[in-house]
Length: 208
Image (cartoon, rainbow, N blue to C red; front, side):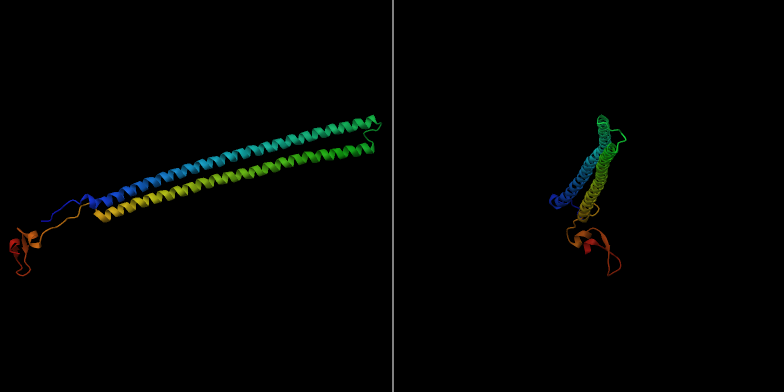
């Protein structure tokens, strides 16, 4: 009869190690995927924080330029008043051509300085808003790159499992130990009636 024997430890040890290795590789890849997503989230948060700072700074740049322009106008008004006072003290009037010319020049200088202050503020704010948009884009790229990397790790982990399972299947089939048959054909059929090819009938296994 067929002798079913369990495989020795030495014969199954390579397969066991293969299975353990596949499991550890799967777990390691899953952990790497989680780490990749966590790192991407932290990096994106840093970009988003910088983006908010840039937007706040842009608003402050506008406000500072408006205050600077207002101060330029105030200083100009003081200069205008002083020019008129000096003209009156010297005996001239506000309609004196030289006085009118000086006042006109001062008014133009005042308007120019105020507009320059506003322009600088708008330009600084524009650059900061562009930088904020870039930070937002970098945050989105970080999330996308982290997710792509995490998915690659997960695919590698599943591939390791399939590879380990394939190795075990090739070694043990469906998990059933292979039968180890011993003895000669006569010993296998001893005590059983088997068909005879010569006579077309049945003969005893002991007559083989």
